[in-house]
Length: 39
Image (cartoon, rainbow, N blue to C red; front, side):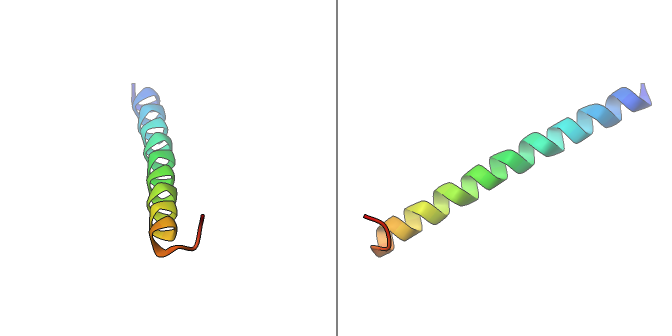
């Protein structure tokens, strides 16, 4: 049970990290576009 819970926690952390990276990239791109750096 403990191993399964640990695996689930690591998976959640991995997914949360990926979502966080995507959000940061999207915000950075929107800021860059708004500032005229892109396009």
